[in-house]
Length: 457
Image 1: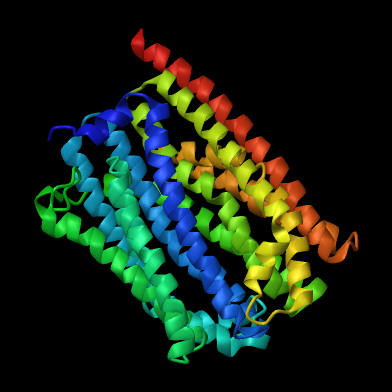
Image 2: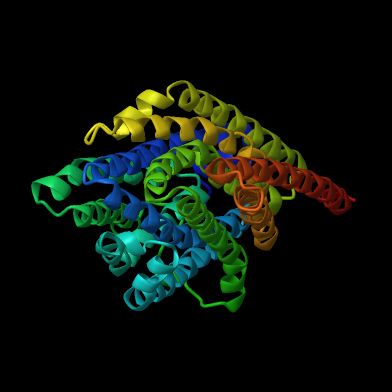
């Protein structure tokens, strides 16, 4: 196999590679999250109970996507390292192994949803809105293959540097969902079920576009052909060493949201959960630069690591952290300044002044939760890029679960600060965890430099 211009650009200047890979991804993800926010907006027109139900179900939906992202991260990491080491046929083999893993996981998720979804939702505190949550959730779990698979296939395009094909289907997905949401929710009078159906159908369109390029047009660098497939436990192991921790990281993000939902419900009630559901979507938007640049960092750092190129590796860490923080800062500033009109837009259907004012207040608090995430997130993605998935997982657990949730609980319950304590504690924990993670990856960078120097000698 000969390398194409996409691969050449990644091997060359890491700054240009990150810019080329990250910015289209940011734009497509912004559109996707705008789509999710619009989803919440349309559901808010059904009342606070359906919106709260969406909030309780959203973490489980993100778990499904998280498994796809995790498997994709494992595939991206291994394929990038193989490309860096110029083992091109083996990169094709690794891609097919990731498809096999995704198929098995999607079946397991479907079975869990069928047998345990109601119990899980009640456990998470959704008993007051269980019927609405089940209406949305069962549709999502029954179509888990459609929800999970696009993230895996998209990661294959990113691994080979084909950012156009990785992002265009996401844009189509978002636009279709925006169009179908009001049709299924209100025109067909399906309520919250309509929101789930619109999500599934738009995601299916995303998947079909990518499969067309790989299976019918067949002009990609990575080849999804059985002639390259030779089952190897070592490849499964290499993918899973990153995929399992990366999937767990996505699950952790959902667990964090569930924990926050529970603490908010205990300290302030269902109305505050509905408000937090909207605000958490904006927190997710603030996290977009870290995700988009981080996914690109997996590719660029993986190729630099596979090629034993220390300078490119160092540049990747520093530059990805810088641009992630800069863009996050701009987004947070916009949310802080325009918090009220943004909140007003999300309550335009029921026009509840109390919800509008409180949503704006919580949004202004939570922008500080986002601000320092880039320092910790960059570290996690670089560890994924070099195949050290469990180090990435450890940092995420420390940052998100141990520190953020722990401090949220301490300030809210023992210190009796109530709902403000939930938000304040989460912010303190996030700041501490992020800087610990960044310190760890800089230490790893130094050890990699010594390793490269020994290789040269």
